[in-house]
Length: 298
Image (spheres, one colour):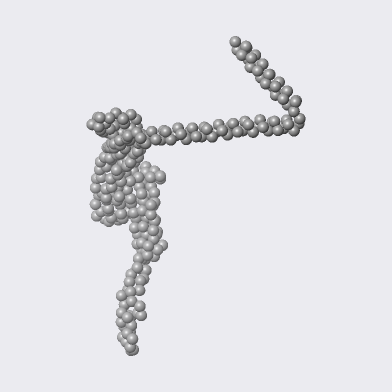
C-alpha cells in the first residue's frame, strides 16, 4: 500500500512539474521572470496573512485566559512556623585599647597585646578564618588649657600665665583601638576564651552572639510548619464560606531566619584582681517562617 501511495504522489508531482515546464516554455524570457516574481510575491503574501492571523489568535486567547484568571475569586491565608534549635557557634568581640603620649608607643603596646590574644586563640585550635579584625583606629586626645587673657594695660604681672586666645586645644596622648571578632565553634570553650581574651590584654569584651551555622535545615522545617498552618486555615475558611478550593494561585514568604540573642559581657584587662568571667549559657535559637498562600475557589 505504501508503494502505491508513493507511486501516486510521484505521478502527481511529475504532472505538476510538466505543467510548470510547459507554461514556462510557452512564455518569453521577460514573461518568465514576471511569472516567477508573481509566484514569489503570492507565497510571501500568504505567509504574511498567516502570521497576522496567528498573532490575532494568540492575543485573543491570551485575553481570554487573563480575563478568566481575574474573574476567578481568590482567598489568601497566612501561616507561621517556629523551630527551636540549640546554637552551635558563638561570636564575641574583644577590643584592645592603649593610650600613650607618643603615637608609636600606643601602637607598639596595642600590637603586643593584640598579638598575644591572637597567639593564644590559635594555640587553642581557633582557626584563622574565625579571627577577624573589625576595627583599627588611632585617635588623638586633646586637652583644653584654660589660661587667663593678657591684660590690655601694661605693666602686668609676668608670673601669671596668659594668652591672647583662650581654650587652645593641645594633643596630650594618642588612643589606639583594635577590635577582633572571634568565632568559637566549640561552645564548651566560650567561657575560657572570654577569660583568656581579658587576661591576654583585651580591655573590652562583649557582644556575645549565639547562632546556628547551618540555617537551611531548621528554616526548611519552619517553612513546612508554616505551610501546613496556612493549609489548615484555608480548609476551615473554605468550609465556613461554603466554597471549594480548586488550586494555589500564589505563594510568598516573609521574615524567616533565626532570631539571634546577644549577651553582654564587659571586663577590664591587666588588673591583678580581675574577676573570672561568668558562665555563659547559649540557650536555644528560634527559627521562624511566615508564609502567605493565595487559593482560587468556586
